[in-house]
Image (cartoon, rainbow, N blue to C red):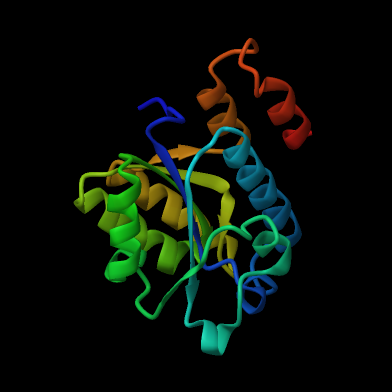
Length: 180
C-alpha cells in the first residue's frame, strides 16, 4: 500500500539512551531516526513515542527527545506498545490507519508491536533503516518474518518521498535537505 501523509502516524519505539548505545550500528540508526522525525514533522505526521521501563532503562536519547518536546512519551512495561492502554487511546484519538514504525529492539518490542497492530487491522510500514537490535541477525529476521504477516518494508527516504508524491509539493525542498 502507498503511504499517504493524511493517513499516517509515526510510532517511535523505545529509543532510550541505555538501549541505543548497544544497538548494532547505532550512530547510523540515530541519524536515520532524526531524519525520519524531522521529515514527519515537515509533513504534519502525528507522532507517538514510547519508553520501555524508563525507571530502569532511562529516558529517550536526548538527540531524539529534543525533537519531540511537544509530545509526552508513553511509558510501558509490556514489550508490545499495544499492551499499553494509553498507547491504544492515543492511536484511536489520532484516528489514522497507516502506522509507520521505527525503534528498538527490532526483534522484541518492534516485532511484537507490529504483530499486534496487524491483528488490530492497521496497515503497518516498517522503516528498515530505523530499527535495530544488538545483533544484525535479529533485525534481519524481524524484517523477513514481519513481511510474512503483511508488514510493508520501507526506508526513511522511500517513506518520506512516497508521502511527498512529487517535487511540486511545498515540502520537497525541506525533505530534500533533511535526507542529504
